[in-house]
Each structure stands twice: as structure tokens, then as C-alpha cells.
Image (cartoon, rainbow, N blue to C red; front, side):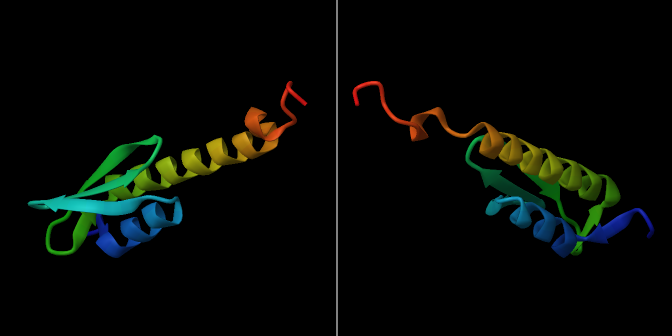
Length: 84
């Protein structure tokens, strides 16, 4: 079916964005990353609906954008302290 993709594709996208497979509850694979909402993917016979691939891609892009913005802004705790 054209509207299904392999679970391995979604897993690769999410793990590339720093998520890890936390647990499996029935057919639901739950990925987590500190500071981000959990991402739940229903998997049936090793396949995932294409909508979850698109959602994973969007989430990965958002995580990358936020990380880039944080690296440009820097961490205010990295600078010299006022006590020096």
C-alpha cells in the first residue's frame, strides 16, 4: 500500500533527531527525548502510515531548528559570572 512506510525509516529519522525508543505498549512504539514531547508511532506488521513519517520529519526539523537557535544564542551560563 502506498500510504505505508517501513518502521525503520521513522526510527532512523527520530533517532537522528536525538530521540530514543523508550518502550513498546502493544503496537505503539514510544520515543522520548528530554525537553521534547514523547512521539508515539503505531506499527503494524513492520509498517507505519505515511502520516507518521511526515510528522517525524517535521518534528526532527523542529528539533534541529531549536538546537541551531540555542547554539547561536549561546547559553547565558557559559559566560563570565558577575562575581569575577
